[in-house]
Image (cartoon, rainbow, N blue to C red):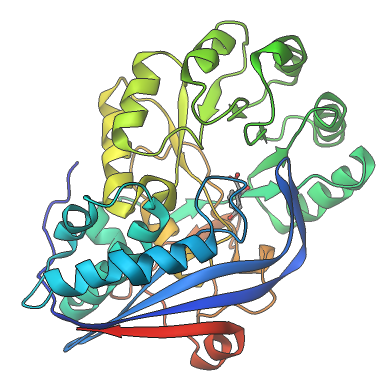
Length: 380
Ligand code: NPG
């Protein structure tokens, strides 16, 4: 359902951007690289009625997508934040942000972070929670965990065991060529019928279809993004050869891309990430489209968000079309110290949807300051 009740416009006085470096509790390895520190940009918008917070989920290097932190830092200061400040000289509703930023091609993660900050400011001013605004229908969401590639399959089983013990209701393991069938088999053998899925982050080509078909015997919930971002037709060809449903992540950069992928039968399931599609409002449009397209299951992805994006993801994941557990894990899955006062915690395999106004969490100013490596403020 489209947003039922739009938010009141806000007047922006300033946009503050910070690059943060947050150490991860353990290295996170995927088919595209290993991270030990999360580099992320936090946005604060200042309005007469108070501040709003957002997060730009780019990574240090353009390995997951073409976006990366220094590029985001540049485009935000040079083009996007000035356009927003100009447009909001009088007042700007959160629903108008995407239109103001639309002339600038791409840079969706930056657009998403700016839009979230405006949305947060507007909803805080109204005393309304993001979940309620987006259309949440539950007060807690089941929590899945994403487990990076480990030294070997037995180390992977050990890592998964720790998360199972904590109560995560669904396990996702990262795979890459040479680290797929044996890793998946080890986890399936060790944990029986646990809900399990794999994520390739674009590491394969259609020539690997036979290897990927070997995963069919593990009754996975899905295989995520086996081929490259623009391999829509090849994903459709692969889907015809696998029993395991294909879920797209990197390829789904907008509601339009989602519509096309579904029409071409390149995906049976869609991972929704607000950063990747340019904002939480576009994320709701992807959700709505999937519900209308014969109830295509969707789930909420994660990008190692701080407490800001994590709280917003919990709100998004509470919409009714999110029928699979998302990568909405507890803050301590990645961070020993989050930058919010109310880190997301796991309760009986679920995380709570915040109910306080806006994103529903308060920033810890000391933790924020300690993590900041660069800061800039743009004024009207
Ligand atoms: O729980 O936040 C999380 C991480 C989930 O595996 C996860 N994210 O490919 O989906 C992904 C991956 C990712 C992380 C992608 C960071 C890009 C950046």
